[in-house]
Image (cartoon, rainbow, N blue to C red):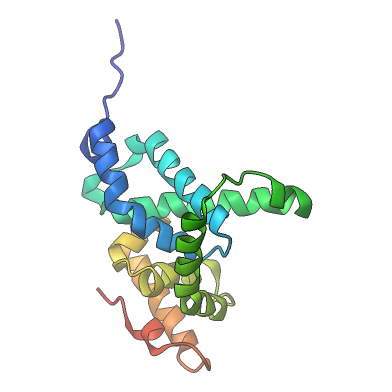
Length: 190
């Protein structure tokens, strides 16, 4: 008996569908990364890695479990975590030389502007860094990346009820912290 190979369906099914998926989510992924990385070359490289990882893992996307954005942010978090682990193992000199694609001046200017625009979000990320990992990751996705609680739960691989509890704990812990925007503790209740 011959086994049939699964054929991908949905937003990542073929070249045209993937191109539309890429165009639909490029800005969101770039913003997500610009909030967390300050080097424009790294943002460009990581954006490409996120979409490559999405293409390779397209069979894990289940439309019934959440949105494309939630799934893609989960992929982006994994790519970013893998990149950070790689960077920790490499020497500082190797980090500067490795993996940068050549950007023209317009690309650098655009990514520099995007990185500058995300400075307030980077400050907020610094403020929530002391929270437990599950709570800080959830708060980042809901308050900063503006995912719904359900989308953030999908990105983190947890249940929606668990996400709501973690979000409540994180917000309660940050209510009286100076310099933390009110939006961090009130937005994203959906």
